[in-house]
Image 1 (tube, rainbow, N blue to C red):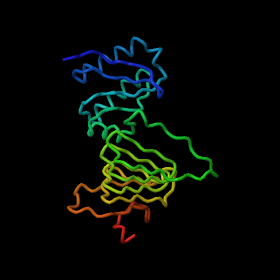
Image 2: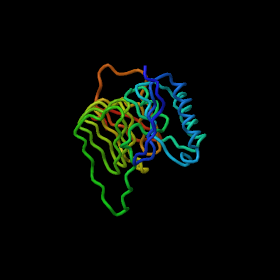
Image 3: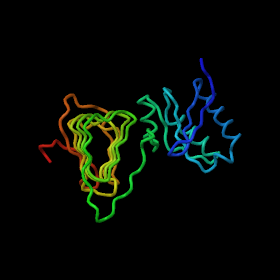
Image 4: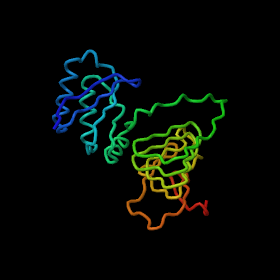
Length: 220
């Protein structure tokens, strides 16, 4: 088995650290050795960590974040093709793709059109738009959509979604199958129930009476 150490290279967003194959603890130790050898160079940087096809949970991810932080490096993204690892990273507030670059905020007097995504949004992908987002397809677990306005999914919504991200409490989230891992509207957060419905129905989620509620489309 190839147990080579981490590869560190510069990318537009900062540093990209790709771990080699081998036990997780061994790779963290090798990464710490590399960081200690160039501590002055790395300090103040930000990094994306490519962990490969490893199954990592919150504890392992936090250990990697803490290791980098000891050398003054901010972990901003964790890359993995494995849905479970990507989901744990997203829940920890990390980006899960290098494409996750925040767009410039529009001017107050500048109208923002809707973004139509005519495809399925897969695990590891992130859509961020200042206006409404319409997805003509499914949103897989491990994917994320952040919109300044409404989010409408003409398919199954199983990923994370944040509508009204700029503070718009009037924003709504609609889907033919509304079962996201995380659902946020403005500053309100809701989770899907553990028990799944046998027959999904189209639903719309909105803020009412200080909380997020979801009702069938025909009852909105």
